[in-house]
Amino acid sequence: MHEKTRRAVLGTGIAAAGSGLLTACGSPGHGAHGGGHADPDGTVTGAPDRAGAPAADTRPEYVSPHGPEVDARERKRDPGPVRRFRLTATATTLDIGARKVKSWAYEDQVPGQEIRVTAGDTVALTLANNLPQSTTLHWHGIRLRNDMDGVPGVTQRPIRTGASFDYRFTALFPGTYWIHPHSGVQLDRGLYAPLIVEDPKEPLAYDKEWVVVIDDWLDGVGGRTPDKVLKQLNGGKGAHAMDDDGEGTGDGRGRKDTKGGKGGKGGGKEGGEADAKGAAARGGARGGGPRASARRGAAPAESELLGGHAGDVTYPYYLVNGRSPESPQVFRAKRGDRVRIRIINAGGDTAFRVALGGHRMTVTHTDGYPVVPARTDALLLGMGERYDVLVTVKDGVFPLAVLAEGKGRSTMAVLRTRGKHPVKLPRPKELDGKLLTAAQLKAAEEVRLTPKEPDRIIRMRLTGSMRRFDWAINGRPYDPSQRYPVRAGERVRLSFINGTRMWHPIHLHGHTFALPNGGPRKDTTVLLPHHKVNVDFDADNPGLWMVHCHNVYHSESGMMTILGYRK
Image 1 (spheres, rainbow, N blue to C red):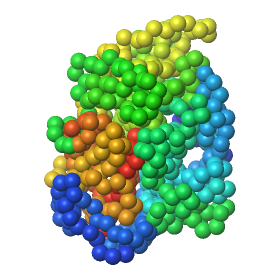
Image 2 (cartoon, rainbow, N blue to C red):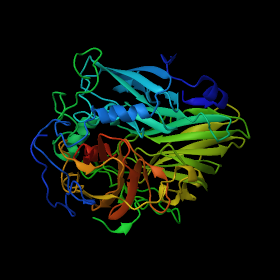
Image 3 (cartoon, rainbow, N blue to C red):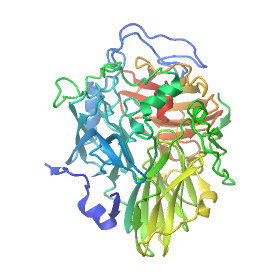
Image 4 (spheres, helix red, strand yellow):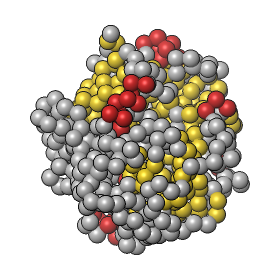
């Protein structure tokens, strides 16, 4: 389903069906909280501006997602040819290999159908919502116009049941991205799909390309749903993304609803990534969360690579491209083929260690941006991270092995150059060999930020505990009226300080940041317990942008906030 020859990739361009080529009220609150101070025009910010008004863009000192500044920025992107797509989010029954499950998905398949465009194209996608809940669509990693970012109550109204919404933006930067909802814990169902933006001047040479989406799965198994798990973990506080009535907690005027009327319905050690010297961790106990695992008699999930506790949720299945290891996807190639593999971690609560048995991988990109090529046996991906690798295929049958880090479970796809009969594939030694994380990579010269001291430093301390499940940033659970202010043209440093005993994959919407010391350009970074990492980005995309943990149970329990561009 997600396998393409090099000729097909460059010859046809678009793989999705239906595509075509067409010519606040009140003054801000200031005060210290969790370290630092709020200063809208200063260089150090430790607490957000706040106001009582619920509307996301009723605070005139901030750029609205629907304001003229956003339109002006989009025009500068010089929108190119229009590529049209349509997706339907619906309740369905999915075959994941080991069993059939009832869940939610795009177009009755998981992952959803790949969306493939060329850098510079205008993406025009209509999302129809046939779910029993409101939903939205977030374009993970894409530096797009703010009102298309898909955050309910901030950039658009939730898309109500029976309604649809037209997303339209320029996909300016090539890379490996993906789509998923930003509504409650819907991400931990089957609602995700790869989004590939091809480089029209692709410098890499390869014969085939595979897209590999890895996921942890519980929906529809034994009566479990992500909503029930969230309630179990956070004591019934529910999700922060939108109200039960689907109206959202903020403005969300959004674009025209094509069916439903108006709107679419700690600090310490430096370096946030695990140090993989010694390649260390050997898995860990099979386990789940502090409450979920205890109720099932499972041992806590533990991983050296992740600094201790590996995850909160016990999953019965782990999938590669929607398939369990009992019925894995098979990739076919010829000996000597050079293959590009785009790997996406779409999990809700699980980091994955990935290796191709019998092969070494050359890492070429992370989160869509090129890096100085680096050879490795294995990779570690936090939720939301992506890596592109090149491999030269050997003759035989090999597992593309995916280990649920610290959870004692694994899954796989299969690489074959010959034969079709099932064979028993042992755990590849590469899983325990040299392992790379983003902290060991360097950005390619052409995408490095120009050296510059930051104009503004925003300190974000990650707070909360596994016992209380009271996750927050600077001690404040998510409130859509919060703003950490920035101004267009600034070099901004986000200083992430993990004051918790849990690792967190932190994601910034609408921008990419640089890891320290010439590190790679990324939009998601892994922050270990009691570690700190400083990341820099240029404020060149006006609007209101989320910063959050990409563990969906942490974010929906409060570990989210908003960067706001001041006028």
